[in-house]
Length: 382
Image (cartoon, rainbow, N blue to C red; front, side, top):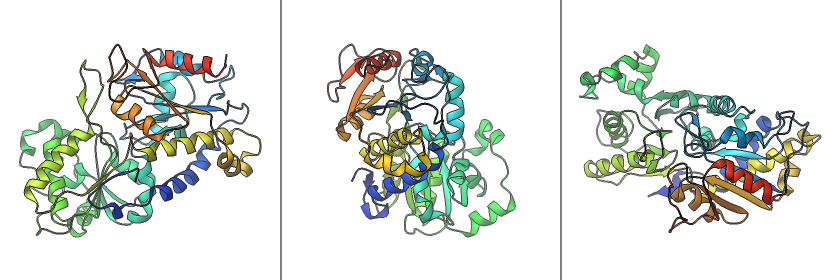
């Protein structure tokens, strides 16, 4: 199975079903893209963001110049591409706006595939259930946007239980940011059991979030009660580290997962059960290919009639994955197989002079600008 599923594979939907649902849901968004220019349809590109396109919201590697080459003189898309990132915490629409401003080009929300984007396929399962959203940014807003009706951020959830975090009085910076949940949220949290916890992005407060998640997961979704059946737990991705502004890598969501799992398994008679999404899962690369196919079809005339037919029959000669992390970007592209071609940049996690030993890329370059230059020359695009 291409999703990483620990302990109980039956707890999540079949990846083929998720791919089908995911494909149908992107149609409306992609169909809004301009049909005034046809992109080249023999190849497509997937770009990682952090460490490739930007670092701490600052463009790197000549990314603005590189991305302008993917559009024609009128600003219409001519090369199909998507952002394929394990980052997240914000709605795809907001990330698209930020990328548009950062790069000086028009980015559609449908071109932004974040690690938690596939969570929207679980709405039918948890639409009316109480769920908790964890991570930096706006995790609850993201899940609400996807269609989950009863989602509470872990900030608000923890605030509903007095003394659930014994260190709270010593976290003045946290107290200033966390508001006072309204009575409706408090009533919901104190009477309904949490059915699932979704970790969308990096935890801002590891000690509190591990404590509260253990309380939720070991009691069947109602902290302070007896031990019960574990609610379902989903991680957007499992990256151990990523490249931020600091010279050396910073711990990512995978490190948080390791810490939570280690502690939970010490205090609970049954091992933690969870499902992880994100790169390097082959499922993610399959979805990216579907989006790229839809992107090609969306700019053809009468796309609203023929989208599925065109995308369903279209075959790319080559799909390029441009990333900075051999264990995530390159490993994922290699596992996905044909038609993926991996390009490794030296602007992020990877800084070696030669190729990576364990997961060598098909090509190693210094920057994303060099990667785009290589692709366009190889594809004979001026």
